[in-house]
Length: 376
Ligand code: GLY
Image (cartoon, rainbow, N blue to C red; front, side, top):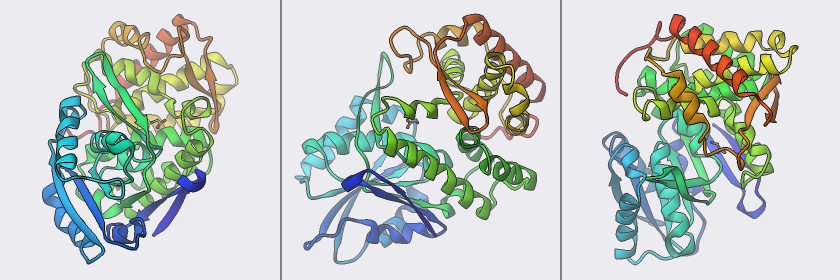
């Protein structure tokens, strides 16, 4: 079991990582002289698998818990779904000394965190992420929110959790495709960190066992530590935190062009990372040779990304409305070498097009070779 700390002064919190970490839930709860009321929100997909173990871990005199199950999928990130959560809490006279727990992936932590941030002007909360993607990304950093018809995550708040508990046992039941969805972000961190993360991801891929627990423990720990440090340095995303968008400008374009169907976010990130690597090599002549080992890793993971047709014109058009733009300038995170990210805003549209074309060309030839096609 290891603990990574997100250092935010009196709002600092632990990310507890390990097999069986769910048993630490009660200990991670705030200490109070009286008992704690805990409102636990489960994703419907994981409820049958984990509600017994979660409730057992919360049981005892100190914690009185009640539960709510949210439908799986993006529709739960809506004002209507949030309304049902407010009703549930307020009908039970929730108070600011109560606690909220989110159990599920990024959809659940986003909407539950937003409800925690806005009910009674902020109720403390914690997250038990059940996907690899959420363990390394969504659960860390306090970004919470819901979607609006004008776009995703347009309504939200920064509201840091009091803890994140990552139980690696929960990854055992994940299909290959769910792991690859998280792997996209892990490969992103490898580009941002450079060595020794690059070699670690390389060894993991060479082992060929995506469920390898020891490897996953190290990968989650290093990813969480990196993201935690970035969040500590730029909690409100006014500067450095933007490096976490490596590969994401292209990825959002690709996802938007296909109406957020067919590819998962993490899979689109793999394509986006290759395009960002291409663009980096166009931007700095010296980058190409430094990025060779990183490209190799991205291409290995791309073999797990299901093959689908991507309309490059639609993807490029969607990129020009990417919400990560600052005013009218389109920003890209580029790598002059692994471990050296830069936020660049003077990329020519032609270089962006050529880079996406090259990445899609590689995807057409090697994408999907090792993919399983279960689930969306
Ligand atoms: N997922 C990017 C961030 O948390 O800033």
